[in-house]
Length: 242
Image (cartoon, rainbow, N blue to C red; front, side):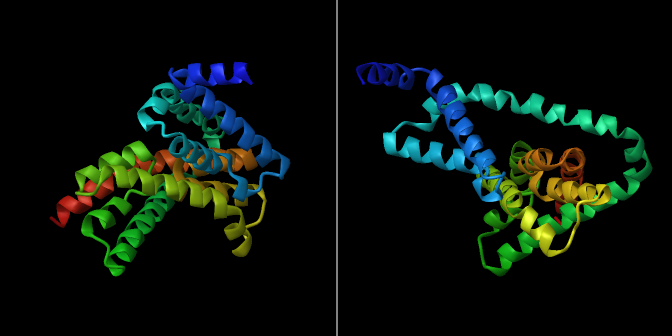
């Protein structure tokens, strides 16, 4: 027991705490996730966030101390996103054949997701800044923050909405696809993956990769498309309408 207390005292005072805590919690959550046949409700990203956040509150540790160690994992997000290009490269022939239709589907899907969220927020009489922060919710968080700031939203709130959109998509996608009777043929996995990547960006793409390689490849494509398309049409729309 004394050795454990000594180890805890050392880790909590160094950047190693954030890195160690993140790895241990995620491995534990991923083990439970695999044990229960990858149930969407046991998504390891979701429960890692919940457990680490609750632990920081309970221990009274500032987020900055935790992130000083966890930022190494944050850095790896870049290479992880780039690695999504490999399954796309392996399917480059079929992508060339259908690129026009995929681009149109990505644009329409992203636009409907963004504008419906804004319209719902205004209908609920939420403040304008909150409604604007919802518009880039289907774009990966760093880009969503920049877009929100450029149109008058709140960057930090946009990041929260982006993460929630990803988690909700990862949790509900399988049930929703079953409800609308999207099957599991190669074409259906393409549709599943592209739809999930369009509305749930990186977290959705990670979920799709775990389930099916075809779905994962097209989720990665949709993720990249949303970054490019949203960065173009959202600012242009707001400039056009003043």
